[in-house]
Length: 181
View 1 (cartoon, one colour):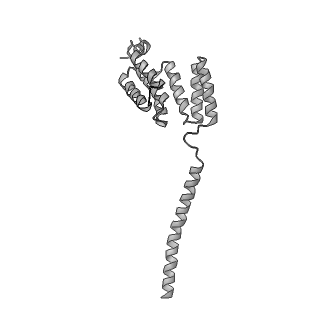
View 2: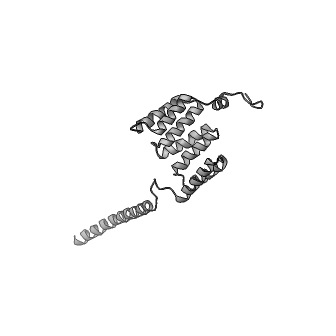
View 3: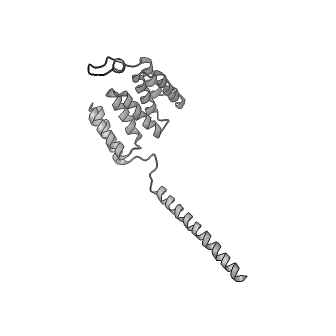
């Protein structure tokens, strides 16, 4: 009887010890993986330096260089929301409102309450003629701002102006001679 109890005790320990060892290994791996990751709000310094360089190129009117530099900044750190917003501004300045909307949407996926991204996306939507969707962005901006804010005022002015003549002719204009019906 004593031998049976000892054997039962040993079998129980063997069953539990393998589960305990597996659980300890899982916890050790999970904690080391979490320790090595950066926080979401920490952007790589190299990406920030590229962003500053791109903004200088944008201010100088060199939009092609600004675009290339911003894309490099995003390759270094895809979570650089300011680079996405600036890339949206550059795309809109180049007349690529659809591309601008995409960049702003990516920025809003990182931070849904980013006022600059909401304003920029609203302006790009206005350029595309999507006034109602731009109004939805304006309503969200007004909800986020306790008082009147610059982003809301700028977007309201863009909505009041409506789509530009250039945007209207590029989206609804005549097809080129080589285009197929």
